[in-house]
Amino acid sequence: MIISPPYMVFAGFSIGASILTKLHNGSAQPLNGLLCTSYVHSLALAVPGFCVVIMALVLCFEGNMVYITYNTCSDSD
Image 1: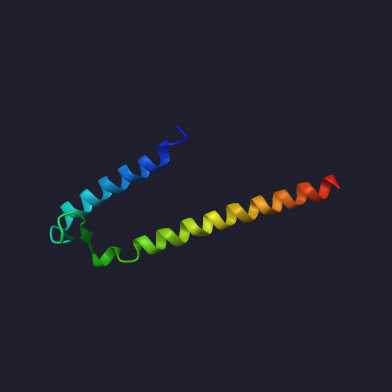
Image 2: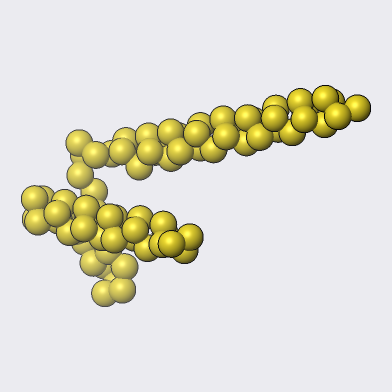
């Protein structure tokens, strides 16, 4: 169960990309036959926005861990 999140993200991304490609026929451009780029103007900020949200959550989580660790160590002295 602990190693499943990357596979779940990959499955979600693959399903989402296939749906996006079906909805916007000209969006997928397999230029070299190995990798495919897709661009849909209405989703141009989706990936950067997702990254900002995830990085903010990680930063809050790490800040909380530092806060708890600092309070635990200062209480034991």
